[in-house]
Length: 225
Image (tube, rainbow, N blue to C red; front, top):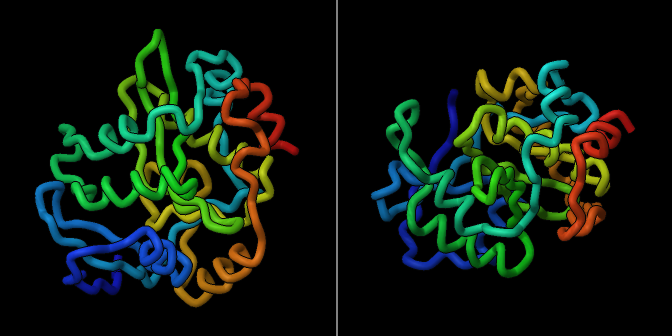
């Protein structure tokens, strides 16, 4: 997939600069977790999940209704982004370096970055994190330590975004894993139009309060709403 990338040479990237970048349709990545540098990326084709076109298999719907996992939001941002940055056998390299973790930690404190987390028996076993701006949510990364944990987190994310009036879920790129959920690719100019529209509105991440335990049945109802 082709993407324009511009190295970042400035020593400090503030949360304000990061928010402006996302509002302009670009996002940062690192070559590896150990690389201190960052570069900006603006893909020619952007991956998005249409919030009214999310695909959910019957098997995953059954897992969701079983409430196998306790789903929380924003309870342990540091642990989620650390898990997303971990090297795994199927992913020996990661683009989440120390600078990205630090900046997103600040954005979490400011209320822009969020997590959806799956817990089981007191352990964090899966989840995702991303950035909320206007009525757009920019999904950054996800992880799982138990089967279906990241998938359940994604379903709860989409349900929360629908419930909160969001208009855009950006996945950055299309992948085989995300394709099963209805992810599509759109050209850069079409993405910018959708982004501009989403930024003119305001989604409510806490339409379901953070302390409220949203069940799988409630999440499914929001998807079908």
